Image 1 (cartoon, rainbow, N blue to C red):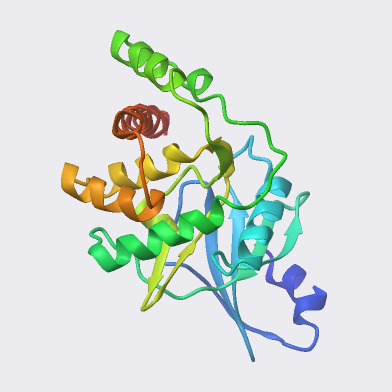
Image 2: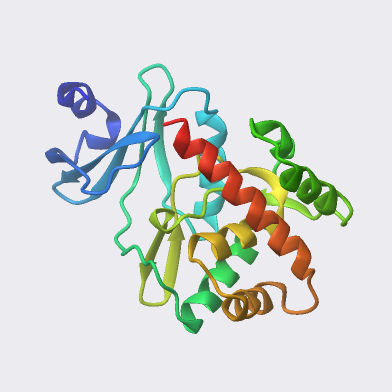
Length: 233
């Protein structure tokens, strides 16, 4: 990214850039840089992955930021292929104790209240391999009522930034309408929840009755989607 181009942006007119450094943990879809100015810290995301609606990503992340669960996006240049957002400090966790489960469940509840006119993801069409088990799993999912909300759809530990009493969701590339069970199942799968841990997390999120078999089915679908996504890279 050309520093001279960035320095001409209105964002930095009265707040000059002091440094631009790569972020230690890089994602698969972007190159990430930390921008330090005299008064602020920003995140520059240079796009790598093609086929992603970056305007939709920007708009949905803006809605999430308005609810204090995502970094606020500030600038988007579709032609140059980059976005600047607030820089949020935090740590990535691989294990969640009960208090963190409650916090994440509450955050997902908030996310799932955001209105979106994006069409629901066609998860079945995203898969290339459809074993008999996967076919049965999709039929099982289709037998239950759909609960379509705005989902993050990529809730791996690297997309969760934890601070003492807060968790921030980052990387909204794949955010779209989906069944809310998908996000719940993704968390259970990414953190390798046991049956007991899964039950605890689901009780915090649903705050009442829920369909255990539907969670399990979406865990299997999420596993297959991740397998194919990483295999393709």
